Image (cartoon, rainbow, N blue to C red; front, side, top):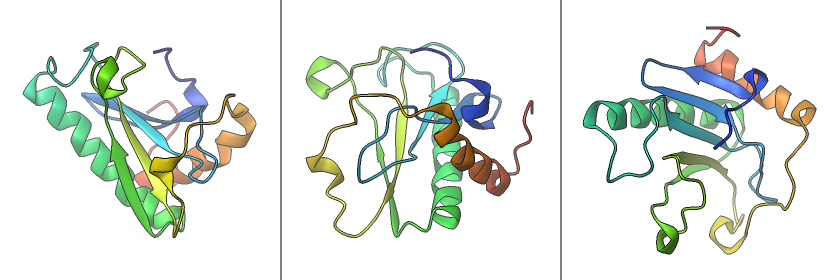
Amino acid sequence: MDAPIAADVVAERERAVAFISPRWWARNPRHVIVVPRTHVENLYDITSPDLHGVMDLVQEVARGMRGSYGCSGVSTRQHNEPDGDQDVWHLHVHVFPRYPDDRLYETRPLDVFVPSEERASFARRLRTVLGTRMGS
């Protein structure tokens, strides 16, 4: 997984980082990816302290998303191995905003990355809610 660009980062903690995904789903745009700071391929290999750090940040992001996106719910996804639909070989958790009848699990991501300018306003919004300053 390529490192996120600084403008996409919405929160940095001791063990995890959260950033606006550059690849969106048509009905669930602006989702966030949370990754451990240390490289680990999947759920089987992550240490307990790093997993707790990731999940604590997932919870913060979910609360921030619910409070700032106007969504009516939040879903998380994490995949392991090819048969588990893993396609990036660094553990990551997707945090999706959910809306009535969005049919998230019946859709696929867009074929192209969303321009950074389009992602920037959502990153700023979440940074504000999460109390994150650029460079923090």
